[in-house]
Length: 319
Ligand code: ADP
Ligand code: F6P
Image (tube, rainbow, N blue to C red):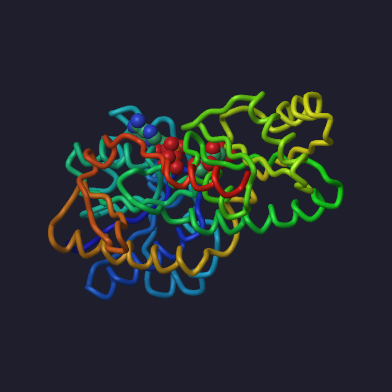
């Protein structure tokens, strides 16, 4: 292993920079050259590679976003385009590629590895939608951002004795809604995994009001339905003033939490360790606080898991 490349792909996530830093510095520490690829797979197929050294990653551990930029590149689904990418890596003398991204980016890496490119994936997404790992890089920071925002919404919601419906990100995964719902004491959590019944929701809100609750918080995962429409329905059915907030991209930014910085550093270091052991087509994860690696095909084939117990806890303690 003489030279590797690293890229970030898909939605950015806080902690991606800490992961890039760990990859670059661990590689250099072990005498391996590093090239950064700008703009994910889109930059790769355009040959946007540049050499990185220790100082290329100075002063980034605390920064959100990704210094390598990121992109969504639909052409990468075509085998011809992936072959061009493999050729570009070979032309640059690159022996292996570290991909930091979510399941889409991992699928790209998996297919690239079928063309003979050595690949390692690091899970970078706020969604936490990769079943093989307990945590993805960026999830913890996003949770803290959402909790901070909801605590502020609660102040005004309580003052006006309103219902607040807060829509959070997560694509097809309800983890952000579930975890922040528990952390903020939401009366109702709506996720794609559990679904919901509008009339039951209104019943819970009315019962809460009757039992003296000064406000009602509903966490809504994106993809289940729009917050504004639901707010109108709830207000019409319950007679209680209801406001909708869509938190949007605020959830993707900001300085990574200590947890995400440490996780990213451990995972970045593991990526280089694996490559030095000659391993390829692996993804790095964390389980029971141990960093581990798994075959990329196996990891992507796992069915989504939903934390039923946490959902049950929320039902028992927050209504
Ligand atoms: P994430 O990695 O966060 O899940 P996306 O799903 O948008 O984000 O995927 C990021 C990129 O990964 C895509 O823009 C594309 O370049 C690549 N990718 C996704 N799915 C595939 C696929 N089926 N085949 C090849 N490349 C893919
Ligand atoms: O995958 C991360 C994520 O923020 C999802 O939660 C969300 O559905 C999506 O990306 C938004 O993507 P875009 O960057 O295109 O707005």
